[in-house]
Length: 144
Image: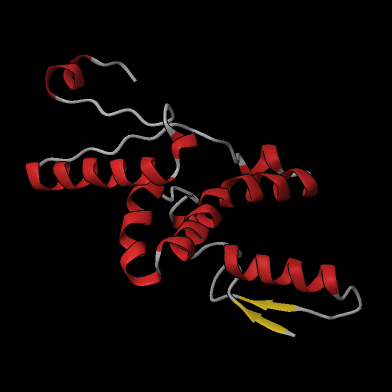
């Protein structure tokens, strides 16, 4: 088996193939060094923005499938941390959960973001309290 690309996708494919078929021989090819492409450049950021994802998927996929895709995307970081723990490389790869901030510089995108968050929290009420909206002077004063 030959896998082209040594980033997250290629590595995940190799790990899955070898876990399911230990006798399989796998060669991984990359244009440069391992993880030197997009995986290495972006630092491996995992930020699914489920509040933005779910409302955008619903018209195309319907509510139930959009929910499943959103739940899958929300679980990726936990799965990646579990793999790093299982492989004993958590410290070396520096995988961890962090807080993030989304900033909007125009009223239209801000209003859209707030509407999407409302739709998302309506579908995922267990997420209420994990998201905070800062506006106006409060946004200028908050220390995150």
